Image (tube, rainbow, N blue to C red):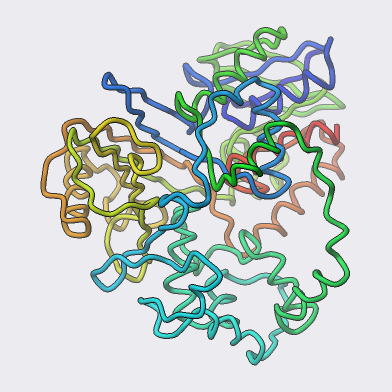
Length: 468
């Protein structure tokens, strides 16, 4: 009996890849509702040779998840296509925020935390030292918003100008709603256990450093360390990764069915019945879903409690506008800038793509808009011309670019990034406990549960297959 993977984004492709490695002879079917795999990872190469990234654009190396992705890239023979940004590159050093009508570079080195750097009113080290004197607060629910936590431990300016724009950049979300465990779980746990973060860090340095898993250093990993990569992409665009995964799956007899949606999922006995949009039924003894949680919840037949838990994990809409200018119109070098929500303007940030990965004499920018505030600024059905004009108005105000772009591409990505609001981890625990208690032949991976980044999603797929 075949194994079924729902969803052909990076999560579903990775799950099918690891599943094929584990079960080399079993039939595997991957079902994808659209005409392509890759999900929100989409690279559009233009005639002149530059690339519009319409979703994620770079990958990080740090941590076990980053190392796992690099190992996957190595296995897919993509190492020669890697385009790294080294740690001494302007795009790695100069990351900015827009506040109070100006662009400010965020502190990027150890020594910079001892200097007063606007928009902060005092050196960063002063905010960090605040943790030593800030009163401990035991949170009975064992969770709070990341904004609240940062404000309590480090002060309002850190919450407003460091944490809030960072959350906009990572998940297009509101830091006042997003769980502290989304990004700062270890720091939060340190406070809850030891009274402040500093004691927790000291404990880790003295007693827990050797607990970190050892990394099997591939040649590619050694190269990354030697060259001091900050982030990296692929020369033909990040979509090369899911495209190569799809090729590997097809070569290894994984049956990828495109333009076929799942209409319903029904459990009975120890089996799962998949009803497809074509009217077919597919029976499996185990289902791996990489679909967004709310989408899977809508497909379930019965199991009301599980359905409600899955449907409660919501997503936000993001508009991505790629702009190309044939001449250089940008005077600032860096990765780009983010906008704190307190500025009340309709963009989340702008990436300076042609600084990160130069191509010719032109300038490529990507403007990100909406997220948690999409409806507030754009309503339910904005026109592409209105969205483009908003983006152009903002880069004129902030960057002084009055020229019209020679090429542009507008993408509205509906329900593209899950929001890990306060209580998210507990919700995921309840979902997993329900699946276990009811002996459902179901495994979950993807961005709805254990992290929204590409590294997170690939690792979640690997973990699911390892635990089968």
